[in-house]
Amino acid sequence: MAKKYFYITILLAFFFTLSGSAQESKQQSKIQESTSIEGLNLYPNPASNGKVYITSKNDSNKDIIIFDVLGKKVLQSTISSKELNISSLSPGVYIIKISEGDTSSATRKLIVR
Image (cartoon, rainbow, N blue to C red; front, top):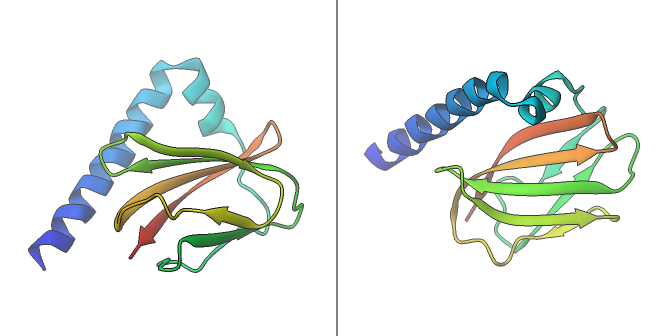
């Protein structure tokens, strides 16, 4: 139970740090100002089979970046289909940033079991 609270605390600290950095960096400001992806769906979450599926209303190419709870980039990929291979990730909690086009992006929590 204490481990779960630790992960939640680290996750919240990561989001607040990311928010603070966004005001200092032009690139982060652009991310913060962008609109979210319409109809975005990430499943299954929690993931246990080494794959997740990402869909949206537009269904165009998506740039994916996955960060661990410490903010380290652990996976970067561009997908043209719905399927993302995450078999290289260890079990844990991650932040997944999904970008579609130049102006649409979204951030979600991803749990890998």
